Length: 144
Image (cartoon, rainbow, N blue to C red):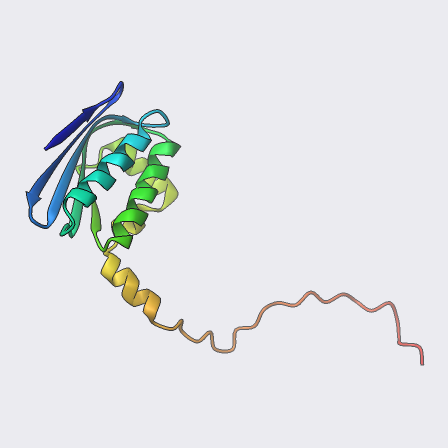
């Protein structure tokens, strides 16, 4: 178990089982502290290479600003690249509102295996859909 207190943020990571890490977030996830969450996640994943699920316990999360959202997106990129599913547990109203406003809640918590399968499938045919072309009226009949 590791705990990293900061001015406004405390992070505690524990291995719940051989495949699951849980990081409790206590305090504000903002410009001043967001990088610490990324460092904690990277250290946890490095120390536990068999991890399949990373559970961020947000129950005691205080404020979250745009940098907090940015680091959550970065955490998602890192976990997805490692084949680890990200979970945002016990989301407080402030985080829920930001996730709703940005429309990223489902993206952040999507199963990376399902995303890989979707990427492997070719896109569906668009049928007879055509792009609109910019047509300008002619200046008059052609000379000729």
